[in-house]
Amino acid sequence: MNTTNNKYAELTTALEQAKKAAQLYVNTEDGGTCNFDNPVIDYRAMHMSKAKAEEAIRAAGLRCFGWKSYGGMRLVVCGIGYGQGNRNTRMAEAAEKSLKAAGIETGMYYHNLAGAQFPRWY
Image (cartoon, rainbow, N blue to C red; front, side, top):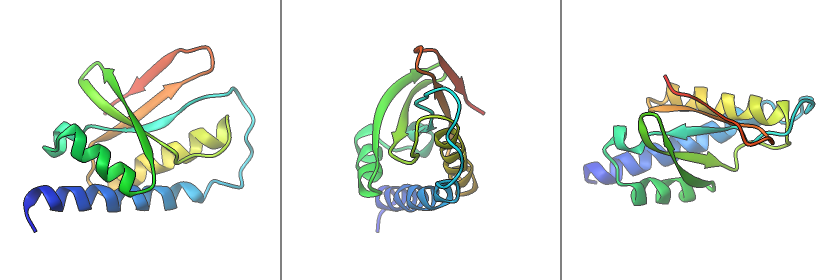
């Protein structure tokens, strides 16, 4: 297996684990404001092409879209959280924490119904 395939498999596995981590919050309250909060990955930090990262995300049963943040282009990973408020945020943050633990360069995309975007990248 070459390095590209290893990175692909590593990202796919990390995303599958992130989905499991998020599921711990599926039965929590969902009050608060509607949001579109999701974890974000920096595929460039993994030395992956955008196309290969998108393929790994799809292989994990998720969706994504490109987002240009302060540090450059990122991929916002969608399909991890359920609900529309606090539960979705908790699930997205649990997934981000799981991705970080797996060594994936990640952050959060906070986006509320009013359209305000609040990136957190560290």
